[in-house]
Picture 1: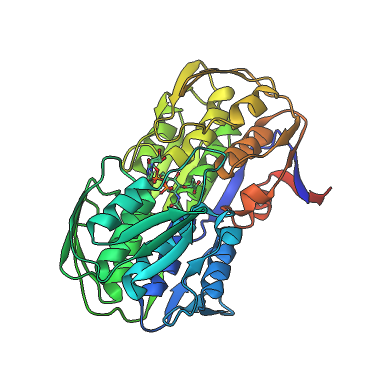
Picture 2: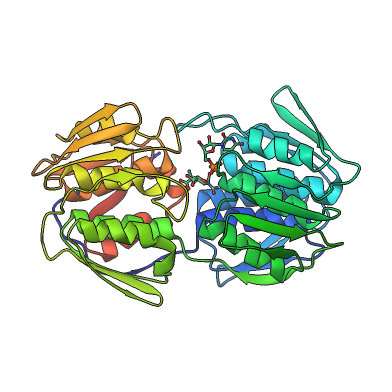
Length: 419
Ligand code: EPZ
């Protein structure tokens, strides 16, 4: 087991480059199940969630090659096992994304129910109800989803809630369905758009990207293609908050500023100087203490829930009081008691955190619980006086490539040690 040891107080200065988006790589890897030929993916991040996805695809009969340049060649065109086993699914909820493509290509699938996780119960009813509307027979038994369909037919799908992976599952199922599928109240996250771009390169017929209404005309088959994964806007946002919380000045390269307008807007409200170019964002805090900002999470293009924990860390040392309201997940505040152990003044009231900024935090021994909560503990440690240790670092490795190396490049005093 490893832990991170951070000696806080350094202002972060310098340049880093974001990696490819985790939440675009996962659905696009699963879309290889739909293709009759291999996919070649470039700009893929080296993360445990990506390795888990490759292991799951291999378990189902796919082959893949990790090329020298970091790209992935994946051939899932001829699966011999239509089961996504609990042993792998329990480690990564996104495994539910095997359901849509496997059902569309092979007309049956047995997928372990993902179950909940630290941040919530994470139901999959929207996925299952929509597939039934397309003609699938769905049964739940001993913790598995048993799905089958003589054929999947195009349907009118209207999601009561905006769901990223439910939208992605239905898009993938609809590409090979018989007829036209319309999805209303579709998720518009940039990662959904990246999946659409890749599927259309494979021969799918999907229109309405970047809107809440998607139209998918089913086709007979999908070919292989080469695709470059979009940058990770949440990784980029995390590093920009790290610079803001330490009074630093950094430039994040390989990021599309348009994919993070709501986060950039909030960073400007903290008093940061922000400059954006076509593929980079520069934040200069000029040594100042950030101004507290109110946050309310909701679906894209509004403020992303995946950046909520990072702004709790920032508000904990900011000037003034603020509220952070989490509207997407019911238990995404596991970072709050941990940051309070560093001397913060954060009060949980239902789905709201009331933050009263303190001048400084004190380093402490902390425990990571989920991916983004762990990132917020790193940010708090970077800003704190003294030394902070963060155990269960495996949570971070799910979604942040080379995290301590990238922070070291920006001048952070951070090490990964065995314990
Ligand atoms: C995706 O999760 C992301 N994961 C999450 O990122 C992200 O936090 C989330 O979208 C919201 O943006 C991937 O893309 C792999 P949802 P997903 O379905 O699709 C409810 C990270 O840190 N819901 O959009 O699972 C659900 O409970 C991860 O990278 C249902 O009720 O989230 C939640 O309240 C964490 N029934 C809301 O919808 C369903 O069938 C939005 O969840 C599905 C979802």
